[in-house]
Length: 352
Image 1 (spheres, rainbow, N blue to C red):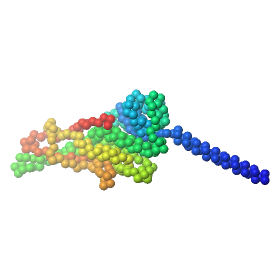
Image 2 (image 1 turned 120 degrees about the vertical axis):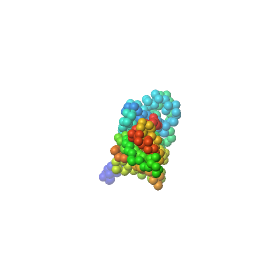
Image 3 (image 1 turned 135 degrees about the vertical axis):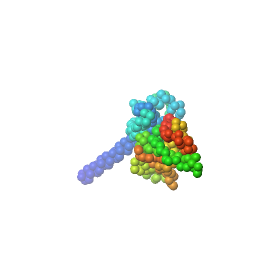
Image 4 (image 1 turned 180 degrees about the horizontal axis):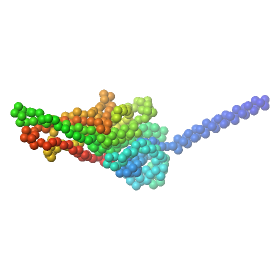
């Protein structure tokens, strides 16, 4: 009888310990969930220095998180002083950040891409300490959905920022040489002639910079394998893009059709980027006629509406722009030759 009683007491104590352990585990989980109200967001920034570019990216992370989870009150987001204080690392609103890509552009400005972790709790407390009344928007049980939406908005912003930074170096991405062939007679009397001219465009270091910058950024903010699986499980559409450079081909998946469309618009401007030159003949600007191109296929839209962007390697021929110059025999006798000169940057985009 005494042994049975001892066994009963022992079992009862073990049950109490087990129940207490479960309560402690659940309590710790609930506390952790309550304490760790954070969002992870990939953002980009640009500026004259690395520090300015970094602060620009951090401000973007704060703005997007603030608008998605707390408030979209414009008077707060438009207050530069408050925003700078909110984005300060010392304030604790940015828990941490990781530099995914940091590059100096040909014009000496900097572009940076960060993966940030923003504390919603501290951000809310910080703003309230400024005397601004705000409340966390919605039910935080929907945080995963909000995080997805935030990543989608952030992706579009990051691609827009990337394209605006690439627009100018792409206008300097090719070096040009020119050659002319023997004239061809246009009539039996040999009075009028046609001189075939070819401008050869070769990719230079600016082209390499643009290719590497795009690859690093697309890698940073496109869907991870885990996110891609989640999107497919949720029956959400994804938008494929392939980038080819230096013989390597890499597939990426974007969250938003707007992101894909921005890249298509950028890729469609390649003929503008390749034609940044002028031809002169005897110190006079030469206007080519019957121009046609034998060029590398920079972009291609596939049947499934996906996009392929293909960069030439440095030193490789990107295009041969052919034209014909009509001259009389007298003009040919006085001809000293043709020259080609880069135009440089004529179209500017600053900060989007």
